[in-house]
Amino acid sequence: MNSEKIAIIGGGNMGLALAKGILKTTWADPAHIMIAEPLTDKLAQAKGIAKGINGTDSNLEAATFGTVVVLSVKPQIMALVLDEIKPAMRDTKLVISVAAGVATAFIEKRLKGKVPVIRAMPNIAAIVRAAATAICPGKFATQTDLATARHVFEAVGLVVDVEEVLMDAVTGLSGTGPMYVFQILEGLSDAGVKVGLSRDVANTLAVQTLIGSSKLIQQTKEHPAKLKDLVTSPGGTAISALHSLERNGLKALLIDAVEIATQRSSELGTQKKA
Image 1 (cartoon, rainbow, N blue to C red):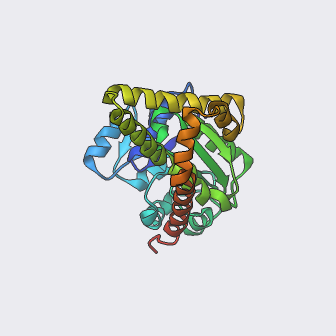
Image 2: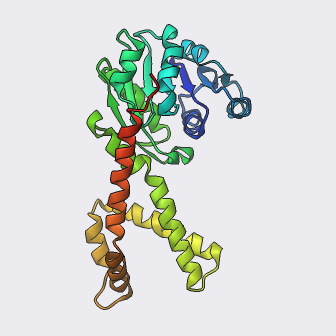
């Protein structure tokens, strides 16, 4: 990766998170990274990430610069961005898209030739290098291209390989997932305040409980249902709380939310401007 030049088109939260994560690796060189962003204030923010990093308001300039071109733009403007950078595209470059719902075939067709494309879906936890990212290859991408994409996203968290047909499901589950967690944590914090805790204490306990519980599942590799049974002793507080959660349909609500987000991701893929 030391020889690769990475162009990130789009200086929003995800684009900046990727740049910051990459810069914290041992192989990163600020001079080998360029961020393209049309908004002046965001471009200034991007240039301020690290001394020597490159910034531009031209997507074409960034695409010309990069051997790896990361498309961190809204799906609705993807077609326009692809048309803009097409003159710089070569089969020797690697394109990585993090746009929800946009298929690799759409990008390949728009760019023409045999440009290798990888589709990726990270989440906003990339900001703290704890993202969950799924990647899949397009028609012309090789195992080497996949390895390059994996290397990029491992800079900001965990990476898994999936088939492209499952990428909308990934978007619904882990891509949108931090929002579900934020909602749950806000609810737990409010509950703590309702039963008498201060906001700071309630927040601290709720966050650490989530971190600790997740770590327990991650390290033991046990099914959540089995670990749930460890907590729900006969006649205790946990089983009483569980009864309330089941009565109010918490799991059904989460399943519905993931399903709706998955459907929306698929819809976004059909709303790209021609």
